[in-house]
Image (tube, rainbow, N blue to C red):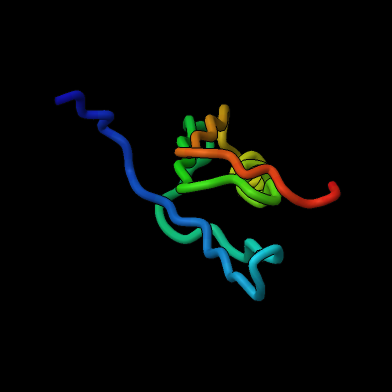
Length: 76
C-alpha cells in the first residue's frame, strides 16, 4: 500500500438538479503550495473542473482530477 502523506480538504458541492451543481467552499487543511488530487465518481457536466479551479485559486501548486467514468452530457 502506498501512503501519500497528505492532508484532507473537501470541496463543498451542492446539487440542485441532475445537471446543476455549485461548489461553494474548500473545507479543511491549508493547500497553498501543495498538489491537490480530486477524485469524483463521474463527470457529466464538468463541475469537477470548477472544483479544480477553486483549488488553484486557494493556492494549490498543481491539481490532478480523476473520475471513474465520464458521461460528458450537457451543451457546454
